Length: 255
Image (tube, rainbow, N blue to C red):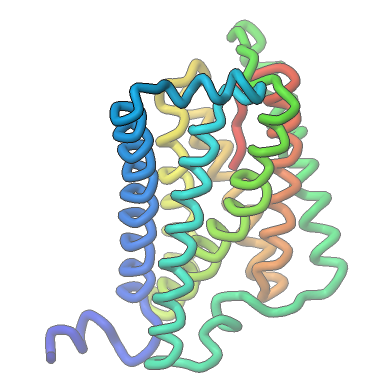
């Protein structure tokens, strides 16, 4: 018990945040691979190829989209459950402390505009500095666009902002102070997103810098407004630009 008390202090610290982060990663990964395994098992059992369903309804990546949604929902559910558990033991106001509170309209509008500006700026650099790198068409289909809105514009911004700018930032802030919390959350966020682009054509350093800069801007909005709402709005608008751009021309780079 003494060891647990040392690891998990009587306030929401880095250990509580780390426990939620690890639980989220494991749950979302298990859910995605479990869904993929289940689909494969049913295909073998029925002697069918479910990927043909995508062609039937003009949705080439239907199973990939569903797998992403399953992982997001499962991981988000774990975050909610653990926060409820910790709020009962540590603080009744834990949800407000991590940033789920109202904000001024100016911060909300500023977050939306900043997301648009940031995404357009990255696009400008991508086509100016790396214009020699060819682009590839990405799921250029109307139904794909509609269904990808669910994980990339609706689920990911809410879940990731709650996790990074909410849970991890508060835990590290309470344990280590603002400077270390700021740096740690920004680096973790960048590394977390690198997994999607390590095999891409754009330089890894460029991808890392994009997510580092966007992470800094997101966290500044979170800190200045004392709310997650502006950073969620920024995240949504950023992803909207990249999602529509991805369906029109090239491989995406959503945050």
